Length: 281
Image (cartoon, rainbow, N blue to C red):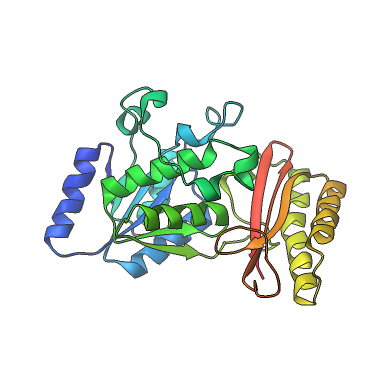
């Protein structure tokens, strides 16, 4: 595995692969890798003979009171994991390489319909930062295919819309969430949980699963189901942000019986960790 830190080095390496007619798969991350990230790399290797991953803690997707400064930077450990997984190229740029001018002066990308709801309601600048950095990385790497975990379903939908609207010739593959044995979705922020909180954390997935079963059994009062789910989470020790039943394709409320492809999406605080998860129905 080769590691590069500049856009010029990245483009030179990818250009050589392109000249040889090789397909390229890309996995963007913020580092502090866990088994879910490595699974994305493994899936990427199934899609193309050449694989690229990025590690970049992106300041523009963090709000003013969020954990940007404290977000774990574990490049050495992450590099070992990626090399063991068979990655070809790691791009690990500095902030100045990605944003050479003050952030408020840089061009930004917005995906209006999908960015202001669910996570975007409580993190109003988050998806603008996500869309901007992913758009920049897509232009730098120019992959044939890019892989994202389904744990952040809203992010996946934002990126699909970005690619569609801006005509990026990139196939976006969503990869099912990798979970711990007790159902907790793997996340870099799980490391913020105390031992006591870690024992409580699987309640989020269990609550989603119970709600999904009620929907499959014919429950149609979505508001009541969501309120009862939030009450269960609060009783367990969470501070619920949202619990919503939405159409999978565009995150809008179901319009009726004809909307059969649904997602239950939830976000809740547990101590210092903001956990997100979702399930298909």
